[in-house]
Length: 616
Image: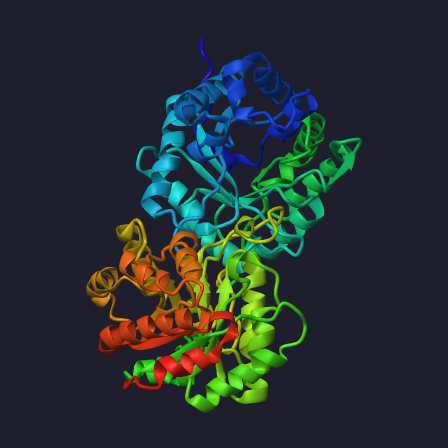
């Protein structure tokens, strides 16, 4: 006669349940190195996977988790296995069920996809749901008893995953995020905000796993237990790993974790288990703890603590954020000049040129951040010197390449406190396009995510939902590319930027008037000011560089022919480039909210020459 397990939700009421430990760690300990795809072992080494499950069952685990944590198409793609998502996950579920033999439960393990979803990344919610749904369907078809969503960082990602699950199954769901050493999420959200986010997922059980050891996990549990009536799960690592002779070794002993299992249960955990570094020996010690404490555990009751709701904060109106923002909001033509930061520590030349531009009537100096991925004085350092010494506004390019989301927020709040109020949100060039091919990039978010961060700060919150007190008042601009190869994708991204809070846009340099006019027509629906970029060409080589090596810039053949006439005559080439810029400005000037003129090689006299006869 085949045994039948009690309904999981009913069983949870009876008392605490014990998960297994680290699947990946055990596979690693059995000689499979980390450059392999562990999920593929469900197909290529079934006996090894069943052995891991059997050892955890023998140790006393109530729940076995499938070897499918990274079984989504995006994670499998680098291994050329994205076409085997269903096969890998279904077989992973079947292997665990075979060992479980209806004597213990099987949880389908689902980890986060690597790509960020809107509002922090380019992947739409619908696309993310479909990716998760592919994996979840296979696990359900493989017969799992519940779904375990684990080691998530971003709540929006977790919500998309669970929404996908709810479309096809009513199985119990555990939703777990990971925490830092201080008990906050890896994005900096407080424990209370984390619990609120987890509750929003609609999961049956919520909790934390991975990253930290038992002590930090206990402190987190004690801080949140009275925030929610939902069952809570905790699955810590076996401490922090140490690299010994090329192998990552976790030093937390089974006895130590067994002792902390007692603390977890007494603090109100409903499900306990282990993550990275925990072995069947650790789980056996935790089982012994549960058995010893079982009679008194049912007495634990949760007393929900009411917490104060955040006060609503009205953002600073656009026309009061900065002088530039005021002019744009009141339809006054703005004039920006782009200057590069110096390659050294002295900004004497740049300050002199900025003063000349201020006296000429330029509204703000626009400062790129690490243009073409080169190393220069930070754009913020130059911006602060210009504003403090010249009383002239700047527009600071802020790129996503060099900072994670926590560093971004810290820098932005610091910049605002120092008086920098105009930000141009840019994704940024990869370092390999610049002078440092071995440098690495971060790209936690792209420009769309950065605008969302700025908008949150402007509403008095960080990206994790924590209050920051007085809100920032950033004037938020974004870059646009009228000559993008895929103009529909460019317009979609602009739509997302505007939805996220973009207040004006600055275009790539305009040379092709037909392309620009088409872009103008298609962007009217967004109803935000457009500042057009203008680059005065100085030679045919400069024109060819712009046309061939600057993404999104299209220099028509007619302009190339004009510049080629003056090849070898430097000053005549500069004059022709100025004439072309003047003609371009005259043709588009009445249709735009302002102009941003680049000063080639810092030659600000070219800017004066272009603007002298222009009436705006």
